[in-house]
Image 1 (cartoon, one colour):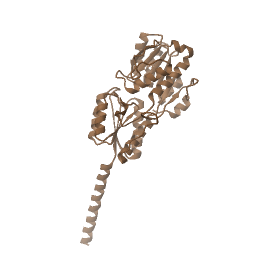
Image 2 (image 1 turned 60 degrees about the vertical axis):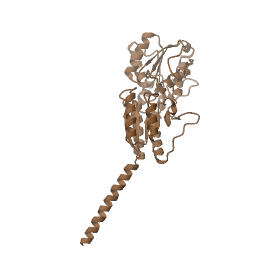
Image 3 (image 1 turned 90 degrees about the horizontal axis):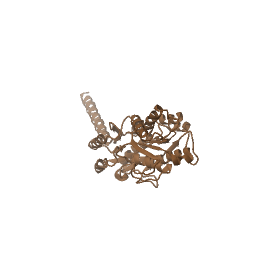
Image 4 (image 1 turned 180 degrees about the vertical axis):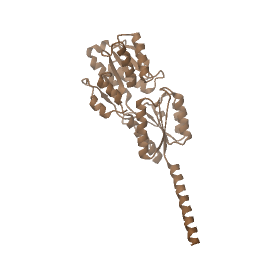
Length: 344
């Protein structure tokens, strides 16, 4: 009887030991990843985080999320990359605030064996990251530029355009959308790698918004002070568009100015339906984030990297123009369909 008790005790101890070893092995083999966004308040990045978290849970990936305090907070993003390296993450998903300055930190992560994927905002140069999952931001801008020109018809030749951009540092997404809009509108570009050097007199000026409503309000005020006859407003995103609209509404001009934007979030599509925004280019942050987590899991499993969309230097996650006032020759969907596809 005593021997039987001792045997049971030994077997129980062995089982506990094996279970402990298995748990340790699983912890060692667990894939960890980081998501680093520009902010954690912009609905676009909130939805991106939700998409990443959902896919990570599905695949059993441990995900940690970091964000800048405000759009343009480069230092916090650098610190987050350093933390991810120290934590032994397998990969990083990054929407960079300063696409050039962050390249050195990204290279440090890649040298440490991490897969780094840019989401939404390509790095400068684009190949500073292992891959980019993004909207074709130039096309997104071009679509709303063509639409605005089509709405004005012959009067496009006399347009007065306010350009509400993102940041003085001109991250790639800022430049691509701005320059795409101008080309779509029919304006000759200067250096397509930056905004602000165009000579077309229809451009009243550029101002920065920080990608938020208050920034959009102030930038609109600044440009109206320069030329109160502005009748077309390009905005980097829908929060900035909402701010610009409030400024125009305050002076009774909300009905005679065309506002265009990029994002396609549910609040933005609702603003298109309400007439606040004339048209918006809809992008798909959940897909970007979901594909990014999948790519990190694949990298951890077999070392393979994601491929680009054919003919492009990134993986194109798609863009759709949403408007209730279609223009001939510019493909679009209405707000009913846009609402089905929207996020946030």
